[in-house]
Image (cartoon, rainbow, N blue to C red; front, side, top):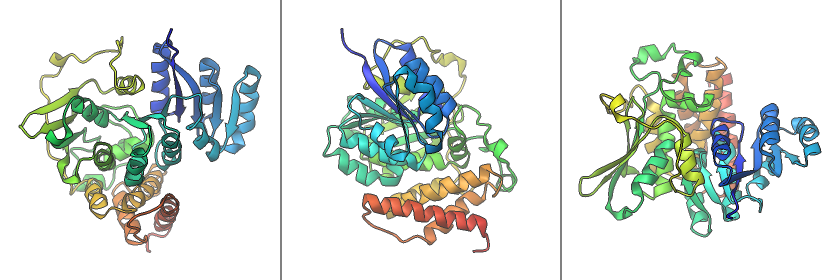
Length: 389
């Protein structure tokens, strides 16, 4: 009998992590969770570990180590804590596939560790390729590791490209729901609250990703990620607004044909596809009934109302550490907006201010990415604390 594929989930308590565990539970003969990690959600990590019995559970916050250890050690589950332990968890020999399900810059180090160890990576952390796409691509070229995307848009493109010659691709078309503010005027956007922004019309996601959807920064990041995942020039990647979120993305070919992947707005399908190594599994999950959708509509994005989207072009044209700066400043700005410290429309302003005040590095090393991230966070936080700067 074939042994189950061993899965390490970096970020098991978040939206993607919990849905990955749903998939593992649904296919117990195919998958086994051997490593679970969380940043601060100790109660849920404990609950998950007692149910799935991994070999290792890691809590990122050292202050919570004792609580997790006391709950899990009596059951024979190894417990560790801290950022170094999170990174080491992605390189363990008892994991075949690493699911990087954390949000933001924190996904970079574990992904690098997984690549260095030759793991199959189910990548849900888009910021890894946003921050250091060129470096990650170079590492993959010298590794047995491979990445299968989990993001619904990139999974759709991955599926559309199956069996196709990359040279026949004319362009990649990444769909965007438009978020909760698709029809808002620039004036309306000045007064929206965090609770307004968190009411996504189609998807149930974590707070950070939901705000990025509202600002369309997530689509900027997805354009950057697609450039590195698929090796397609930036000018051949575009975003379109598709409010129904049924067409997850498309590929246009040089003969004029367009292939699209359709499905319900649910992450279980791309997670299953990635865990199974780009194979299709029989599922009891609800399926798309195309007759339920009388029309599927598409419209051009508005770069004036949503300037974050345009930052993707700037990052790819300039290269170097530019996208790393954008990502860091955005994380700080989104956190400030969620706390009510800034207006929604100040998010791109803070990012642009940060870009103007960070040293450009054309070919950053890993250490320089780390330093850029730290410096950009300081500059963005200072701008929030002292708006007059």
